[in-house]
Length: 243
Image (cartoon, rainbow, N blue to C red; front, side, top):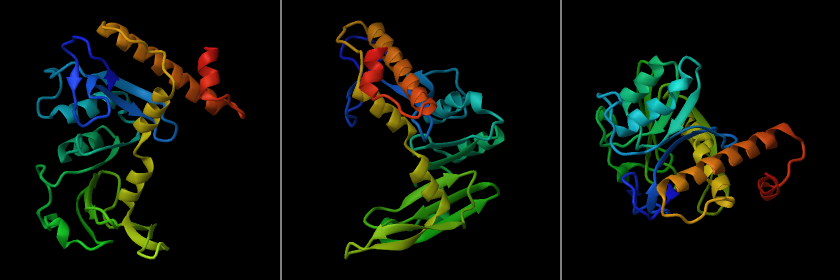
């Protein structure tokens, strides 16, 4: 979100977000560095997307438009995820993985067990051709459901979790969920860079706030590339002031 309290038809109100009023930015970022690869300013409900898909699905298809036939792996949360989207991305030769809401269409009926019926470490899964759905109960949390077009639902790995005595013990976990926890978060890394230092100033003009955001984006991406290209990088603040 780009904070903005002035007047604009594009301004959104999101009460559950740290920044409640402003411009919604859809973003695609590298999972390792946080480098922003693509973004789109949400201007309201559009009619130029694929009619068979909803808002979240069309956002993913739009942001990943330049990744077709390149076999990239993309990760996203349950706002965007659907089985038709995962299938469409596979057609585009884009591997995809995302958390999945149990009340969404096409959710496997054999994975409908109530949350309180799962014990810690329980795993269930279903697979149809290249699409897999896996459900796992982590310690101290509700079961998480994941859908993927690049993981075998039956493949498991070992993760470390603390028991009641505070000791780390090995726990079996679906490989897809382990990969999701590892690689999901590129946009959060980019947002951390953006929040650290900004040139933005107060303004009632919406286009000025977005202009500042675009400049900040260029500075952050430049700093990430700078860090990747030298052995001893300056601190973020020194790099930003130097520009």
